[in-house]
Amino acid sequence: MARKKVLVLLGGKYHPFDECGEILETFLNATGRFDVTRTTDRNALASLPRSRYAALVVYAQGGQLTPKQEKGVVDFVEKGGGLVGIHCGSDSFTRNKGYMKLIGSQFIDHGPVLDFDVTVSDDTHPLAARVQKFRITDEFYILKQHADFEPYLQAYWRNVAHPMAYTRTQSNGRVGYLALGHDERAFGHPAFQSQVVRQLRWVCGETDVFERSIGCGIVGYGGAFSMGKHHAESINQCQGLDAVAVCDVVESRLELAEDDFPGVKTYTSLDKMLEDDEVELCVLVTPHDTHAPLAIQCSKGGRHVVSEKPFCLTVKEATDMIRAARRAGTVCSVFHNRRRDADFLTIKGLIDDGAIGEVFQVEANAGGYGYPGDWWRSSKAISGGAFYDWGAHFIDWILNLVPRRIESIYGFFPPKRVWHQVTNEDHCWACIRFEGGVMATFEQSSIAAVGKSKWRILGTRGGITMGENDTIKLVQVQPDGRRVESLVPYVEGDWHGYYRALADHLILDDPLEVTPESARRVIGVLSLAEQSSAKGRPLPVPYEDELFGTKKT
Image (cartoon, one colour):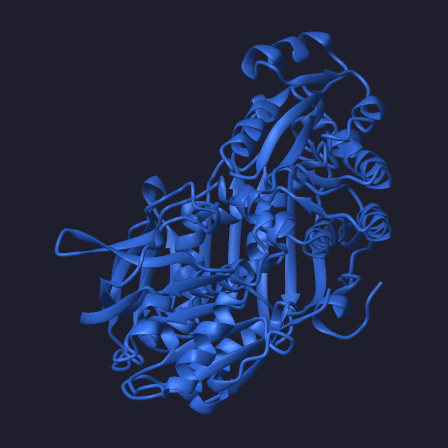
């Protein structure tokens, strides 16, 4: 893919143009789609050859263009070039009527820098696809309209909605404008960066990509928790994804799928479903021991794959899945939707904000005292063992809370003592030692008559624990030694966000949120904990250098 050359015009008053220009250049270049040149020279606008630049970004304030400079910009756009204005781009060259009409609006007033919500005002607009409400710290711009435009993001000022993003066309060219972007706080916001990238792609002529839809096939519809139905519903709620097929070996489950989703195609053979060209993504909702062979089969069939948790059972299986997808040039991921659980997002936000200083110990616990149940999830050969149940969630959470290289895993899997009717373990415990003297433990038990807090996290300036009714308790130690305790309200959870992020990756080539390498790392911890227990010593986790060094497998 050839990079499109983009000229960024900066300069003026009241904004940190150099700092924001550097952030802008960095994240645009990182997409692999753009090659950015920054300038403060207005004379560069006098001659903007389409052969050299695909788009112009204006993040500048004040001034007036010469007739030659103004004509250069207008001609560039009307002959097919793209223009994106950011924030004060509507407060630039305000005495130039041609530019004002081109940009479409003019800044007339603003409120203070504050936190406010940005929402979608037109969900049919292509650039609004899968965009959710986001909160940003920014200067609220109020605009005067100079030309017709199509707004799609908005925010409220004194109970009145004002446009925060819009697009328009002029002759053969396209224009996008984003009212956000006062300083580094906005430029560093993921939603802001995503909108700049989307607008640039749109003004550069990539319009069809935003209308693309991907057909999805659910492999395994029945069984536990109606998860096949849950996946199909989540997929259908995501713009750009459609559940078009279901595969199951049990006919009655296919009949149920047809009742739940009239018109869905059904198959009793995965081979047959892979002959269906409408199915581009296969979602595996099957017993754990089938994930690896089915994923590899789907990858060889040229399909993207999402596996339910856990990813698979062994590191070798995970590696084989990764290699099969790489050879096929397809995506392989795992449904770690619980990265978007409300309690986890709240805890991660506290840690990322430095609320408890530097984290040095994480303790996590799941289970209680009770018979595990007579089904495949209690069969070690099929499920992988007790650790592969809640452990698939907790280990992924821990690895996201502690973004450090793992030095070793130490496990304790004592002999079965109570539930001899099933083959899964009664009790499991593992300790993860990270670089920098950081430790994490996880305990999964069905014979724990005395419970523990779901989370106990210690930092150099405080701690976090879960209390009654899963309340999050934050303890902060002040410089004078005083302890300040508070209950922290949950942020909003978002399970459906997994598929929106996946769609953004498949359709717009945004970064893959849950990579197969991160999924393999979870499996490494789960499987090596048991091996460590059998050997009676800590074990290293393979492929850490791939994530934290230079090696790649």
